[in-house]
Structure formats: structure tokens, C-alpha cells
Image (tube, rainbow, N blue to C red):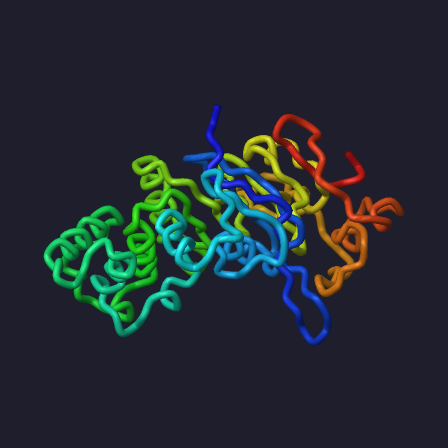
Length: 317
């Protein structure tokens, strides 16, 4: 039986605005096993990135619990979290914005090793050797060791971000749309690299994206988010073969198929978005759902297991 690495229970992250309380992440729960990938998908603004950052405590959670290797981390102090961060890392969406333009590749990759005191500045030769080793892992030429981010293309910049993430030998990585800012040809290279690294080092990924065709090939399980809530959570193949929530069905119908003879049966969503600021009770997708009924608008609909490992929050099932 697979061993859980990460367990999230009723996690919430609210932001206070002039208009009211924004429910960015609202009562999200899941378990992620060692060596597996959970894909988190949904439209822009649904709370995917906030979920990843709240798990890492880059945002402090409003409520809920996060367990890493059986230890609750939401109550840890700064020093304890610093030690935990060796095992929990993040790859950011924009490789250029996440790199310091004044630091060379060598300095960027080696920075975390100095912060965590794995090496000191007196151990410059050993540090440089480790940096070159990490560059080799991600396919960066040693000649680039003293280059700056502006001298490189997007693919190489993202490889730097991945090397920096791997520097501390993490067990869990939040991949926050790591290829969305890259050209399609470069996207495939980075995705293949991430799969190879996962196989080699036994990494566990939380892979955040709005591209369902990407998570289909990368993820063991997929969670579909809508306005801060998970509306469906299932094994990858099962979700693609039998999507149950109307929102999931609409997302899957929007995936382009490279076949001119294929008859596309698009699900067109109409209606206005429910506001995530002080949302009213009920399904947040109801205003856009073609199957919505009175029961959908009365109260929040919890996730229920309709098949082994397949959870959905909908009155239709």
C-alpha cells in the first residue's frame, strides 16, 4: 500500500478586501502518496496557486491542517519551518520573475545551500561542484555557470529554477504552472525533464495547471477546482473516461483534438461567475451549470465518493 507523504484537511485561505472576504481556498482536503503526482486544474483565478502556496505556508492558512510525513506543519514556528522547507520546494510559473537578475546561475542555484548551511562560503570548491552537478541533472551546460538570467531563453531559465529546487534534495515539490510561460516546443522538454527527475529521485509533485492535456500524462490523480473548492477528485484515467461534474465535462470538451475529422462536442458555459467574495451558500457553479436545480442553490455540496477514489460534489450523482 502506498505511503501518504502529504495530507491536507479542510484547508482554507481567505483574504480580506474592501469588498468583503475573498474565499481563495475554501475547505480543500486530499491525500498525496509518496512518488505520485496530483494534478490541480481549473480556470485562472480558481485558487490553484494559492492552494500550493498555502500548503508551503508562503501564505498562512486561515483554517485547516497540513500534515507532512505525519507531522502537522501549520502550527510550526519559523525555525522548524526552515528545516521542513528542505523537503518542500516550489517551481514558479514565470522563470524570469522568480530569478534575481543580479545573480549568476551559480549564485542562484547555490543560494539555498548557503542559507540552509549545507555549505559555507569557505567551501567554495565543494559548492561549485554541487552546482555543476545540479546543472548537469537539468541539462544545463557548464559554460553557463557564470551567465545571468537575461542572457538565457525561457527554457534555460526554467531549468535553473528546477535546479534550484533540487538543490536541497526535496521530497515534495509544488509545480506552479511551470510550463505555461514557455513555447510549446520547450514545454515538452521541461515536462519530460520533470518526469525523468521524478523517476530518478522519487519526487512527489503537486502539479498546478490550467492545461488538462498536460496533467493527463503527468498525474496519477487529478483535482478539479472551481472558485476555491474542489468539485471533483479522481484517478487520472477515470476522470478522463468518466467525468461526472458538469464543470469537469466542460473543461474536457475544450481540449483541442488534432484531427480535422473529429466531431467536437463542446459544452458552452453561459451565465455569470459567482463572486468569490462572501459567496452565498450553494454550488458555486450553479449559475453556469445547465443542470442546476433548487437543491444546488440551497447549501454547499460536499464531496462524496461515488466510486473507489472518485469524489464529486454534485447533486446529479
